[in-house]
Length: 356
Image 1 (spheres, rainbow, N blue to C red):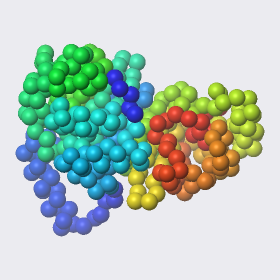
Image 2 (cartoon, rainbow, N blue to C red; image 1 turned 180 degrees about the vertical axis):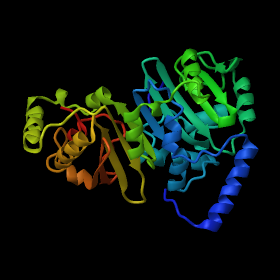
Image 3 (cartoon, rainbow, N blue to C red; image 1 turned 180 degrees about the horizontal axis):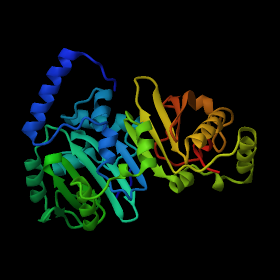
């Protein structure tokens, strides 16, 4: 499978009208309204064994960029502008919007959100269609472009078809649709499609049943895009080990001044786009509230000064605006100039978000 690259206002009258409208819309579509954050909804359809999860809030990104996604120019702008602002790095589908629209009749421009999870048992992309997408039309198009259905799973040959090239065929080789929830599932093997379906149907627990992951997700709610990693994965992604003895000596000296880093049980980062500046949060879950408070102190101190393992100073790229500990989670929030740096790949030395 291809590797990926709100404010609540209390206004009684309008809220009551909106609630009725939402309820009627949900009844007509056959599904209950999902009032949770998009990130929570997206993680709640991934299996509990998920060790790395990516999330893209396509509806929020389109709104932020002022794009409706219904025209070819809008889809092209979504592809280019969102990528330039590091908003689609965690997406499986963000780089193939035009190709998907041509072949499948829908693309990331027609999604509410997209999640991608990797687990020992497999890897899967799950996405929720926007309300304007016809699931019947999606199914009809799958048949027309060469997919065959066996029970819940649609498959296409790895070579694809005249409408679907080999790259898309490999990425979307095994599919399932859940019409009531308006979900599409793509997995690296048919068996893992059923694992995800078991979660969607409530037969198996989701990634949100893993407390550290759920706590980090709560700290990142409202992100346009997010990455969550189990402890060892986050450690390797931010490691300075391959950068030579001098860099490692700088890291050791910095920790001697601030205190030692501890390994999180789960960590994550989430980006919120803005007209001029972006906001990025780094959240880490630890074994206890006391450890989280101590690590908040250490990591805040490491968020200024020389950018160890990179060039320049940390504050020239990431301007610390807030540092909080809530329960066992420590969160640092920075202002970020999107032209100065990109961090949603999850790769690269990052001492204040790293491990011992």
